[in-house]
Figure 1 (tube, protein in one colour):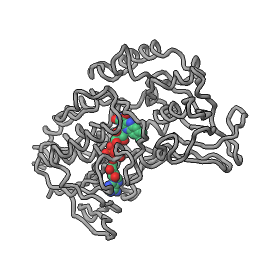
Figure 2 (cartoon, helix red, strand yellow; figure 1 turned 90 degrees about the horizontal axis):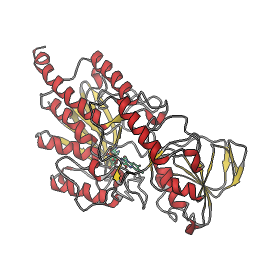
Figure 3 (cartoon, protein in one colour; figure 1 turned 90 degrees about the vertical axis):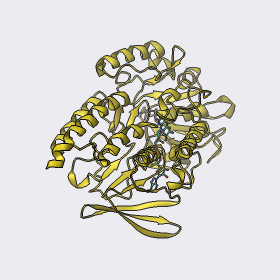
Figure 4 (cartoon, protein in one colour; figure 1 turned 135 degrees about the horizontal axis):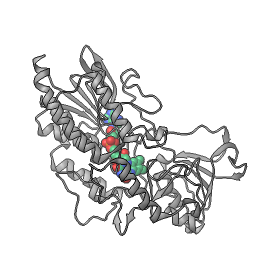
Length: 443
Ligand SMILES: Cc1cc2nc3c(=O)[nH]c(=O)nc-3n(C[C@H](O)[C@H](O)[C@H](O)COP(=O)(O)OP(=O)(O)OC[C@H]3O[C@@H](n4cnc5c(N)ncnc54)[C@H](O)[C@@H]3O)c2cc1C
């Protein structure tokens, strides 16, 4: 029996659904919101979109487009979130997916009885049991559950996570205020660059625990991700070439008043901004070390300084979260869930659970599940067989060493993937799995 449940209608969910539909595979598909698009649906009533009004995607249009639905040729290189949302909606309609989605339907619980999976879904005030399913596609996103550092003391000003930031006036009017943005990731540098605009009268401080390399969005006038180095090139060589290019383009971070990174370029998930370094160099943004304490309207910093502050914005990332799964079925440790080909656990009992888009691929996550779903669809249609569990575990560990071995150890880097290398390997794995089919059938 093949009957599939899909959770979520963001780009990971809808590209997987499209492939299953084309393969004639039956599925139930639940989406908690009233719309598709997940994170890219600005103001999504599910309360989980972290898109701010000024957000432009950091991935160029050349790399984010779906393989059989190119993005419009008249797009700018780094489209605004509203264009991405429009593109997603056009895709869903073009492939006739919208009628297949049950909106306003939140999957509350997924569990196993025997070898079958079941789900409890809350819709229109009632809870219903659905199933049995042979496979569950988990595409609930991993940029919605805020990671907030614990800082001793209490603060009388505004505290918020970047997920809830929309504009300098929404949800809180920050004009003329002293604001501390914690972090130096992509969202931190975007929000700091926006709030550091002199016209807002804001005093903007960025607090950073460690230095990062801030990469430009363009190299020599071209989007920096537009021309990837070939997948066959060894990772160390690619990195060495890219590191040289980064250093030539941006020089030393200390020259902009930023902390010196304790790692080389590309040994951390890249922070990309063509604006932030200029704002630091202009003196529009001040930089301070870690916030170590809160005392009424003041924040204490690791260098012993203190500042009277009106608002504290945590741009400190997200945690993996699967509220509908038991910890036994999704054993996340230190923000890490090890998965074979970043999709499925080697434990045979759990091989019905498929995690789509649960990766931090460079340069993009937008069309990543579109690629992953090729292997999943091949499995469902009998054209692919998984390796034995011990072999899955061995490949998983080797893949993790390849994809993230060069990143510094951090809960930020548990699911890093090199997109091009991943696709290259995925093709080989699908071919290897096809060769396993006759043996597994015979067994
Ligand atoms: C500020 C920001 C900037 C980003 N910039 C980039 C970028 O430049 N490039 C890039 O590639 N990626 C970027 N990302 C990553 C982004 O997460 C992905 O691009 C993309 O949104 C992932 O799609 P998804 O379908 O996996 O998850 P989501 O977009 O989060 O969609 C998940 C869907 O599942 C639904 N859902 C969740 N739980 C349930 C449930 N229990 N029941 C039913 N439905 C459920 C949600 O309502 C949602 O519709 C960025 C993320 C953030 C936060």
